[in-house]
Length: 290
Image (tube, rainbow, N blue to C red; front, side, top):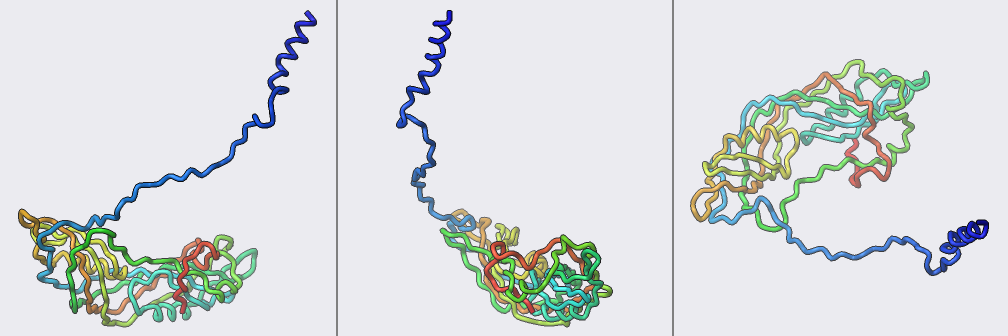
């Protein structure tokens, strides 16, 4: 019996003892090149047409009341004064100076952390109420979308931190015991008229009306007004081999826009930092600070 037990122990030890160094399994990650098939780019807005859609009448909507949303970050020092403004979103060109002046004239209850007043970057939103009084189409060109690469809309990137902004002492709002608060805020912009270039894709029905729109280049604040205007535009529809068909057309144009005075008495703030960001998290563009 004892001999049998010894023999059993010897048998169980054989596999480990018999294992050779060159038989040891080693798992190594290996890159296996896979040649992917070449897929030619396609433009979903392109179509094989006998004739592309063409605009006929392009009236612009008059007296449209709307809200223009401004977003940015303000540096509020320990005394409650706004020392610097960086805009993250401007719905219309040319209004930055007015909003900056309104913020710098506003008295804030300073931020507090651990019982002391501290400086912080405050992310804010201003809803400007106003009216697009009207406008005029100065130039408009209809272009049939070409096959191949689809058109790209204008990119909107978060501004990267400026060196002087990174150097300012600041407590993140997420770490504050008390957020800064505006004692009284009022922003107002003067009425103005300017020329604005726009670029968009419009789907034209067989009846010559605009059914859908894709904005490629247009300020945020003008998109609602332009959509309302496009509802009243008329087109010669695109034509296929069997007659009128629904088709997309790219419209490149320049508009004269008139906006009446915009104003707001409400400053909304966020308890989440948007600016300045860490170096690896921000876009490459210089921030539009003023």
